[in-house]
Image 1 (cartoon, helix red, strand yellow):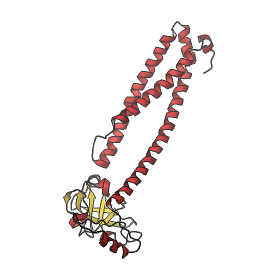
Image 2 (cartoon, rainbow, N blue to C red):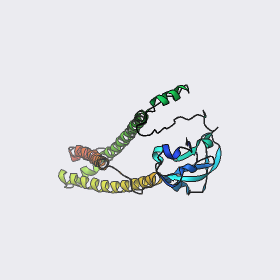
Image 3 (cartoon, helix red, strand yellow):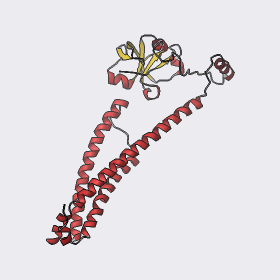
Image 4 (cartoon, one colour):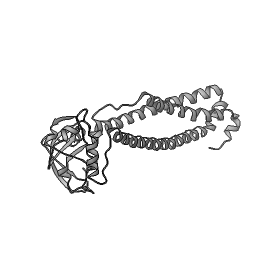
Length: 270
């Protein structure tokens, strides 16, 4: 397992970061030890006191003792190491961020400004600014993911619609023959709709089953929850869109074929 881990000061880890520790103690975090999220521990089979084998960011293999498990892996990362462990294994050897918690009502602005001036290149960032930057990055990533999904769905819709329309138009001689032997256009239309409804039901059942198994496996591996959460609007859009696409891609071409005289339709080459 290759990890990109964050480093913490073991002397202040428990006071500045609330990882929601479920077992162990962050105060035990020092050189040769590691704290991991409950999700990562579950997937790797680690418990408190176990030896965890991993690779640091520069590819160095290490074996570390697990001293704490925590729940907030999504917010802080799945692996937390002390600065002593990371020393010499990062590109710059410097801390990206130093989290500082002041006492309620304490005026620490001037002190932090003097501290920042003593280290060129460092800046003081308020909590709202820091979290705002993270929220902005997440919003941009979310928008790009939605755009990518929309493009993929668009291609899938075009491919499915094209296949359904071509399959419906290929039945020109079949439908014309049924009309020549006595079936009315209404009866042919009802037959085609019944066939499409049955096929749609089977397709939805298989699709939902495959999606449920896939999503359940992913969500259980990432969050430890066996049942994935899908908003009601998501269900409506996905299932409703599928039904509308399937029916429209069949009803419209079938209606066009039924407007063609059956004798003329029998002469259409498949």
